[in-house]
Length: 143
Image 1 (tube, one colour):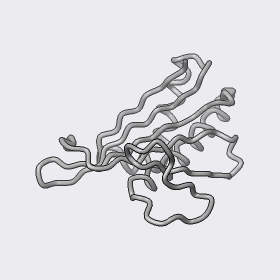
Image 2: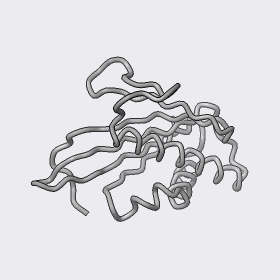
Image 3: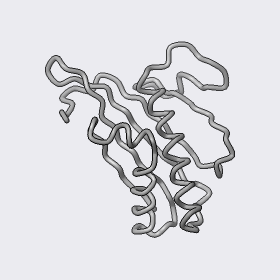
Image 4: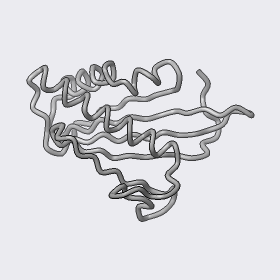
């Protein structure tokens, strides 16, 4: 697995948990812009692949967190969120992806939240697909 030397584009998502009710709203941002570039209330033109991948992965990972919490009788905070950044970059002439996942679970004990994050990562199909293929950093914030 190669590390990216130069980031060319980044897709960022911020996904909130709704108790697996099946609704998904995605807002895409443009690098360096103060306002969001795309809101998926209907199909919008030209979202980048990194944005779409981050959005799909974020939705899947958030659902996995919900499933693990339900199985373990963990009450999730109402303001649970998942932030995912997918970077497209280059090392020499080769192109690569890398990602950063952040699970935000305010008020949950750090050890419980960390275990929840890693188990969700182990069952999420997008996490499985990227494991060993791209550099991924998983962080947990409980504050």
